[in-house]
Image (cartoon, rainbow, N blue to C red):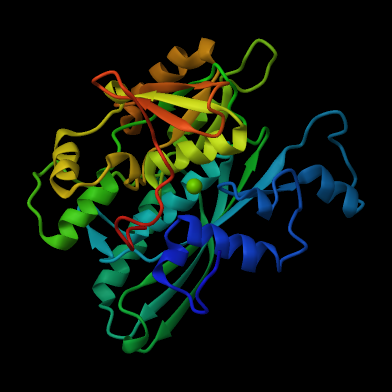
Length: 361
Ligand code: MG
């Protein structure tokens, strides 16, 4: 329920107040919202425009009859992270990676990006150029051109740091949804959890947590493209669902997958990859690492018979070297996530209600 008559920080925090804002004020007032298989109301990592629909609606000569021409995938994201520079990276790499990853987890190859920047007066030109170079480097890494942009400046008292919006356009032969998990599928996490959120928090608050604690921000398409092509005997992709565990962390992403797929998920605490430094920082600060944002990880649901093959391929990649099977989907406790703890008890893993750490993506 939307109780207040003004926007509050929690309306952008990923929990129930944000869901209410999206449902009551956005989806209720945008009535024309689907152009393909996945529309705005699916609230997936991106939405799609069906290529066969474009051909049909525009009387374009269709040479692809009989083949599925696939779907154009579109996603957009604004990045408000503070500070703009954080351990090992900056908002530029984040803005490109975040959008490339939302396309990647839909099974889409990135075709092009656009970039809109809002910069406060007084922002240093040297920092600005560093950010642009980082954007270019991340985009180059996955071979995606940045083809359009916009720059706006505002008075220094209207904004405290740079904001970057990126829109990504991709193409997928077979779109991977966050609602496709089936009972029996294995669930893979592609690396250690919590690195981004905890390193940013430590940097911002001035905690000394060891030198290996840096953000994991990375564009994942090169890694993900090598697993989306793995096929079942029926010729379909072996990947049943995928999501990047950003805001809301692994807990948020797993719950969304379980709810949308109508399955339960059971994860094993002992199998969750986590760095020692992140684990002890979380303990010290009383933070559940399952709820902390990641910017270079994916959660992948895969047919059980292909799980080891997918894991082996992920581990060959630098961003997937710590990948692990963390659990599986069940037909019990549908819509819920359970964790078998290291002492053998079971506990529910709930969707985080708010943002533990604001302005980290
Ligand atoms: Mg996402």
